[in-house]
Length: 71
Image (tube, rainbow, N blue to C red):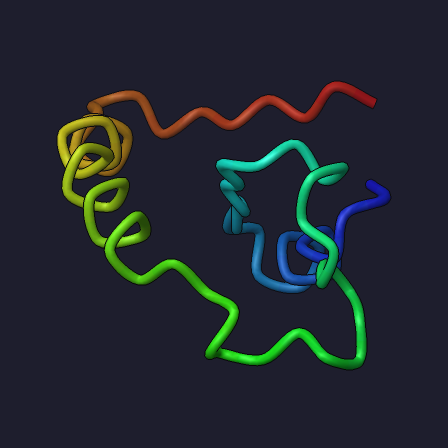
């Protein structure tokens, strides 16, 4: 419930997951005033998204629409 995405879930009852491929200790610009698009690794993002497509398709197309929130 501490995520920035929780209010979205709360309002719409649809999960909104954020996926990060860094460990939050090795990116100096995370939540920093200088965190601009020129600091982003677009090639890495493109490769990661392409690799995630099968997993996302599996979640979206599952017959079970159950979402469990562990409170």
